[in-house]
Image (cartoon, rainbow, N blue to C red; front, side, top):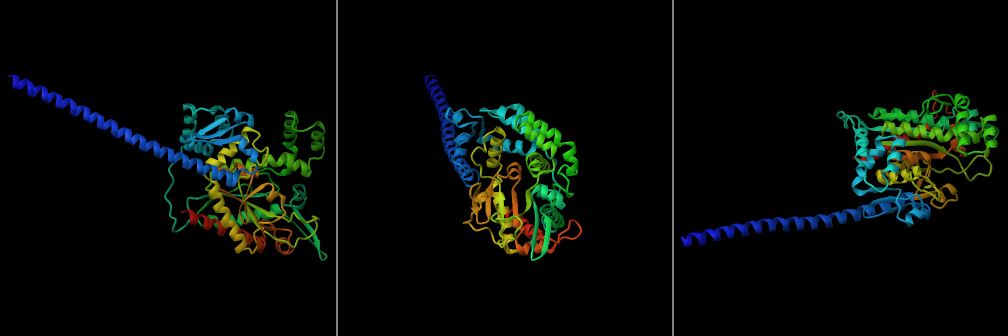
Length: 455
């Protein structure tokens, strides 16, 4: 009997120690796994910090004062309303590393008003349940149909094309300040950039659609706003309210208000009142379309000429991507949201790839050399960040506001003597000049090379 009790106690003690050893092994396993996970997390955070610091330096920060408005930490990206707030560590908004996917969905699938509202409400907290619900509902997408890339390599791709300016005749081109009106060797050459860009856009769209792409052109009629009404109608019906609003918000003086309404068909009225609204409409259309890429088409002019009416014997090409924030360009919350959006959406390097391929085609297909690295142009040296020969980051309004990879092309100097002679025969939509057809082909080749590279 005694032996039975001893054996029984030994069995119980063995069972007890087995349980202790079992739970101890589980604890040690979890602990080791936790340390490993922590080490991995530290490595991942360090990689994120390095990645976004590099992107900010390479594309976004032109002036040192921009550093007063953001910090990249082990927790995420902190945005500040002022240098004083940064010193106090009072963040306007924090995007934590774990929230990057939600942030991207918010930018890609909600409108600007909603984005700014959430950005300002979020402050130093993580996205609230309400915010996440808003983002999830907006981000829902129906399943895409099957593709046949072998037959049409761009099937399933969406491409937005923005033809710069709007003028289709010389009168509006003068108001825009985008006109070539040069007399050379007894012959007068007259044409407008808006005519060239719209022709190029439609030629390019046709080529892309033949490859299976779905294409959006932001404007499709000369002398019409992006919202679809004639410019003259916009001046009569909408300008008075726009001017009144600007005066109410103390953005213009009473004298400026009277001058704008008294003589509305002026360059300054177009530049100050129409252009910001029209660019916003282009942005809204493009972001609503949710393209894979966006291409902005412009034709440049020689800024070094002493006389506007003289021909140029220089001819260079260049391409822009988003970035290069200068002093005072993060002065409001909307601009700061645009900054962190560009940083986190993952489009900066893709934009460079796209711009680089298009720029290569400007050189190879059109025979127009890239602007030399050493040049006297203020808009390149003072307002842009050099990325690669011919490619610059620049804080252009449309580049800053678009959610997709974007390339903004300046294929040539339209006032160059040879280009001028080749371009002046262009007449939208009936008789595209041969040179304009070549420009469309250059964009097409660059776009095709981009999609081939990223596959």
